[in-house]
Amino acid sequence: MKPILTVLAIALFLRVLWLPQNLFFGFEQGRDMLAVAKIINFEDLRLIGANTDVDGIFHGVFYYYFLVPIHALTGGNPLAITYFLIFLNVIGVYFLYRAAKDLFGEQTALLSSFFYAVSYSAIIYARWLSNPNLIPFLAIILFYALVRARSEKWFLSLAAVCWGLIFHLSLATASTLVLPILFFVFLYKIIPSLKQVLVTAATLLVIFSPYIVFDFKNDHILSNKLLAYTGNLTKEKNYLAAYEVFFTEAADNLMPFNRNLSLVVLSAILFWVSSTYKNRQTGEYRGIYSTDEASGNKLFSEKRIPRVLTLGSLFLAKKGKYFYLGTFLAALVVFANLWHTLSVLPESKGNFLQRSQRTYLGDQKKVLDYIYTSAAGEPFSYEYFSVPWWKSEAWEYLFLWYGKNNYGYMPSKAITQTFYSVWEPDETIPIYKDNWYGVLNTGSNIIDIKQFGSLGVEKREWKQKI
Image (cartoon, rainbow, N blue to C red; front, side):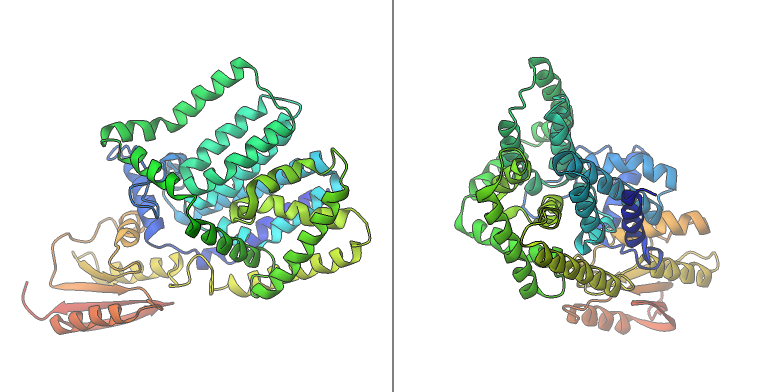
C-alpha cells in the first residue's frame, strides 16, 4: 500500500474518532442549518451570510448554498453533513501531498501531509460544523493550483476561484492571502493570457454577485463598512493583535498544551529557515519562501498550516547537520498533538473552539426523545436557557429536523399548561442561568427532571392556569 494512503487513513480516523457522541451543535450550527433548510424550501433565498465580528460586514452565502445538496441528500442530519466535510478535509491532505511533492519531492510531501494529518488544530477544525471548516480545504487547493500554474497557467484561474470562495467564508483570511498569492505569481512569472484574465474576472464577478446585489439593495452598507474596515487594518492595535494570533496559532499547531515549548520548537524551525535561506539555491526553496515572506506573521493562522508544516518537513528531509535535532523535534510535536487530541476528543474538553459549553448532538437528541415520549402526542411548549444567552436557533432546528421527522409534530407556538424547560451548561458566567432558573421556579412546579450529559430537561406545570 502506498504510504500516502496510510497517511490519509490516519487523517480520516482522527477526524471521525468519537464524533457521533461528541459533535458540538450550538447556536451557529443551528443558525446555519435553519438558513440552509429555508433555502431548500424556497422560504428565504439569501444574498448574504451571517454577521462577522465586525459590525456591518457579513460572511458570504457560499457556505449555505454549498450545503444545500448535502443537506437534501442527508435529510439535514448534522452528523452526516459533518462526515462529508471531513471527507473533503482528508482530500485536502492528499492535495497538500501533491503540491509538496511537485515542489520538494516525495519525502518532504509525505512528512508534510503526515504532520497535517495529526495536527490538533487541523483535526478540530475539520470536526467543526461551521463556515471555517471549508477554509483549510480551499486554501490547500489554492496552494496546489499555484504550484501547478507554474507549468499550466489555467490553474491560476482555479487559485482565483478558491480565493473568492474563501472570501465568502472569511474576509480576514482572504485578505491575508492576497500578498502571498501575488508574490508567488510574480516570482514564477506566471503571466495569464488576456482570455484567461477575462474568463477569471467573469467567474469572480459571479462569485461576488450576491455581495454586489445585497450592497445595492441596502444603501451600500457593505461597501462602506468594508472601506472603514480596510482603513483600520494599519492601526497599531491590529499589528499587536496579529502578533497575539501568531503566538496562539504557534502553540495550537506545535505544542497545544504548552505555549513555552511551542515557542522553543518554533525558534528552532525559524533558526533553520534563516540559515538555509542564506545558502539556498535559486529554485529549491523559493516557492515556500515566497508565500512565507509575503504572509509575514500571519503565517501560522490555522487556514495556512500547510506551508508551516512543509517548512518543518524540509527540516527533516534535508539531512544536514540539524537532521537529528529536527527528527527529535518532529517526534516531540507529533507526540504532543496526538496526546492532546486523544485526551480532548472524548468529551471535546478544553477544545479551543468551544471552551464555554459542552452541548453535543447526541445528548440533544436524547433530550428531544424524552420530551416527545413524555408528551405522548399531546401539544407542548418549551422554555430554554442557551449559550450564547437566549439564542434559540439550535433548538429550533433540532425540533424541526429530529423532532418533527421522528415524532410528526413541532412544539406549540402558544404556551401550554404543561411544558418543558431545557438548559445548557454555562461554565463562564453561571449567574445568568441561576437567575433564569429562579424566575422559572417562581412561576412553575417541577413534575419530572432528567439529565443527559451536561444538558438538563424538566417537565413542568405553570402555577397559574393558562
